[in-house]
Image 1: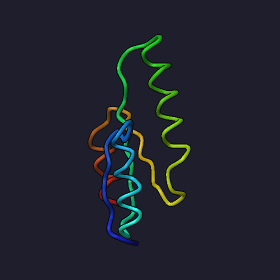
Image 2 (image 1 turned 180 degrees about the horizontal axis):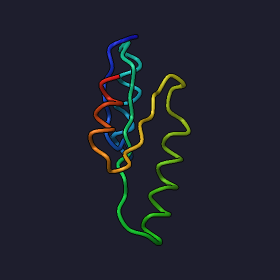
Image 3 (image 1 turned 60 degrees about the horizontal axis):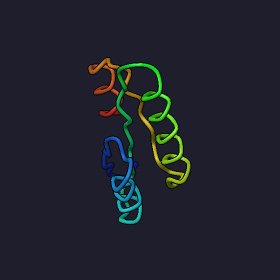
Image 4 (image 1 turned 90 degrees about the horizontal axis):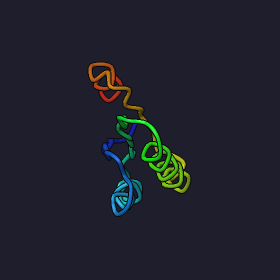
Length: 78
């Protein structure tokens, strides 16, 4: 496996880091944090997150933050 670069919440200009990592030969690993709350803010965030991820390079790995930080750290270490 290639060396990885973790990119946390690549929305807006952070999207560029995903492409930069891939273009430089690194494995982009994206983490979208768990959003607290409900309602319109959550729906808007989920929509923006899906739109961002839809155009990332195919090799991008996605990790989900469920709020269980030891489990997330174990996934990152793998």
